[in-house]
Amino acid sequence: VEEGHRPSRKAHPALLVENLPALAHRLEMAGVPFTAGKPLAGYRRGDTTDPFGNRIELMERVGVHGVRSLSAPDLAGRD
Image (tube, rainbow, N blue to C red; front, side, top):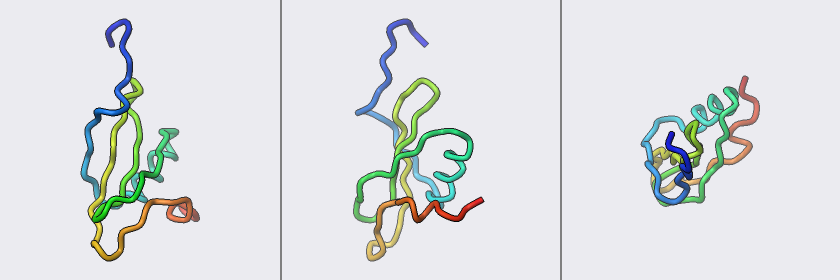
């Protein structure tokens, strides 16, 4: 990493994933922060960061009629 590097928070890659709640749980169990994203029609989404602090958005396609944001109950009760 270059000296003076500032992590990117606005411009960021977005990765299309399957089963975002399970992936979010795995990230959190590994000590990697995950923040649920704002609702977007057709997607469930959230953010994490790479080891250098750059934002990475994770998105999962969902049915248009079942869109909801990822929340704490989605992660509750998982081992």
